[in-house]
Image 1 (cartoon, one colour):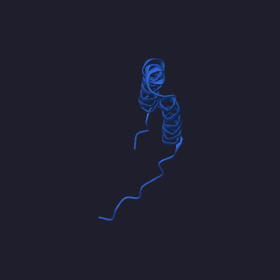
Image 2: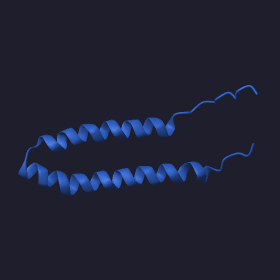
Image 3: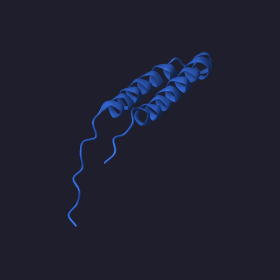
Length: 74
């Protein structure tokens, strides 16, 4: 069985991390600022907790070993 190259593992993870970080930063910079001024300070607090939970789950799924699945009998 051929060995996976390092780039096939790094490129998808880098794209996912960068998209999430950029979109979250833009959300906090623009949308949360507006919601804080117009509605309540609860929006950035709740969104921050959700963002931390999401980043921890992405980190866990990125670095966790999926294991080996045994083949079924023919």
